[in-house]
Structures are given as C-alpha cells and as structure tokens.
Image (cartoon, rainbow, N blue to C red; front, side, top):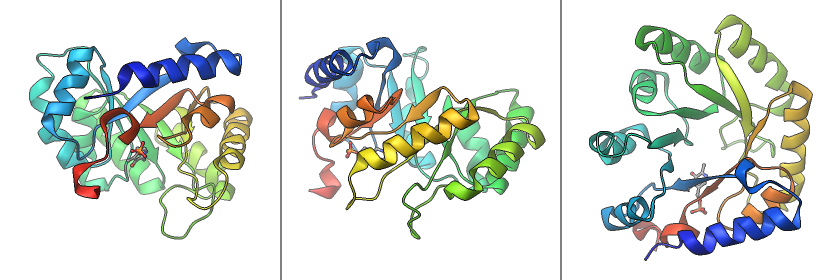
Length: 220
Ligand SMILES: *Cc1c(COP(=O)(O)O)cnc(C)c1O
C-alpha cells in the first residue's frame, strides 16, 4: 500500500550514480492529508521521519503517537503563522520554513519558554514567485543574520520549492550555492517528481509525499 521500499531503492540508486553517501540523504515522508491506514503502514514499515505542512493537522495526526513512537521525527514544511509558534515548537523537531523576521522572533521566544531548541532551515523563494512563501534570495543574508545573531536560532540549512514550470535543477543548484556561501550543511529540496535531480545537486532532505503514499485523496 505504501511504497517505501521502491523509493528507498531509488534513493540508493541515485546516491550511487551521483557519488553521494546514502546516509546523508534523509527521506522526509510527507504525510499531509493522507489517510490513517497509510500512515500506520509507514510506521509499521519502520519509517520515523515525517513532514507536515499545517500545524493543527499535524497535532491531530501525531501528538497521540509520540508515546508509542519515541523516535518519531517531525518536520514542519509549510508556512508558519506567529500565533502558532508555541504549538509548532512543542510538536515539531525541525522547522524548515523560516521566512521572515517576525517568525524568527516568535520561534525564539517560544524555544526559550519551552526550553526546546530546534534546528531550523530558512525557506528561500528561489523563483521569486509572488504567491510563494520563502525569503527572496537578495534578503537571505539579512534574515540569516537576524535569525542567528539577534534571535539565537540554530540555523542548519535552506529549503526551497521550485516554480512548477521551470527545470527544478536550476533552483536546486542555486540553493546549494546559497547554502555554501553561508556554510550551512543541510539542503531540503526535491519532491515526488524530482527527488533524484535534487540528490544530484546535494539534497540532504528530500520531501516525498504522493510517490510514497499514493495520491492525497482530497486531490484526486
Ligand atoms: C506536499 C508537499 C511535498 C510533497 O509533495 P509530493 O509531490 O506529494 O511529493 C513536499 N514539500 C512541500 C513543502 C509540500 O507541501
């Protein structure tokens, strides 16, 4: 029912082809909107790293499972509103979508309050699309400095979602260059349709949903 074996085989193959260590490539299984039976099948397979794009939905799906799966790791991959920062810090293990000063401040405050210091990635709007979240490339240095120096956040990587109508590789290569300039080790890029390309450009975290779980029922 779920396709973890196939996708892991493809990751392994791409890693070999592009001379990457497969241990450096983390499969973030995007479980948003997926039925419970598929989530359970993924857990039964032994997978423990999941991505969700909405805080409330993630709480409903995962909070009650924490006790049974203590090694569960959850990444927030969708936009965060500052009034949800407290809940996000309490539930997630990595925030991938830092994109503005206000979110840096509210996350920093909550992390101190809860004494939970999560690694964060900055989301970059590499295609400079108006409707897409993420910091513009020209504003990345400034946001990084604020996040790190003023807010004391632990920034470990960058994340992007390339425009649909452009070759993803251009954006993956650009994100890798930006991360290199800042000395950041993690790159979250690549989804169901392009994760092998992302691996070729150095992705350390690929976010795969439909190829693992099947199409999201609400999007059929
Ligand atoms: C939904 C989503 C994914 C997964 O998309 P698929 O095409 O189903 O693999 C990856 N990243 C983000 C940010 C998403 O919202």
